[in-house]
Length: 163
Image (tube, rainbow, N blue to C red):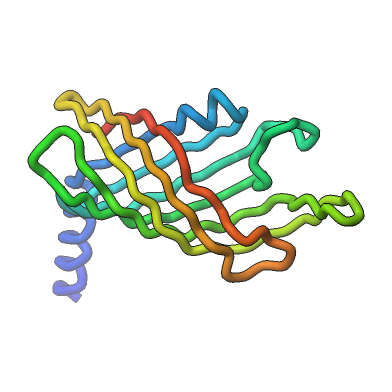
């Protein structure tokens, strides 16, 4: 019992003492009327685990909008450098989304929900005071779900704060 409590205490203290980051995707917020917020937890200087959520406020009648109305994306990032303020990273993500795909033949929309796996790459700037900016570009492929599109993009410019 004491070993289990000690292990739990070590895990919790390690999790609480690690660096965290909260960020907003400004390209989605400004250009697409979409709220895209991410949380990232750093295990060390080169590895992080995070989750990203998208909620689409744009009306379906709009000329340009995401097909997805809601997206939840857990991700794992590996930063390839720790020596500079700008770091290149690779990301593996799983994305669960709900939305509607336009069917061109009868001109109707098909509601769908499905999951996709994908990869993304990007650069991140981390200022000494905690301010961060990252850009990323990636693509995922839907693995399950009925009526899903083939691919899901992961694109954006995030502005955030590390604490």
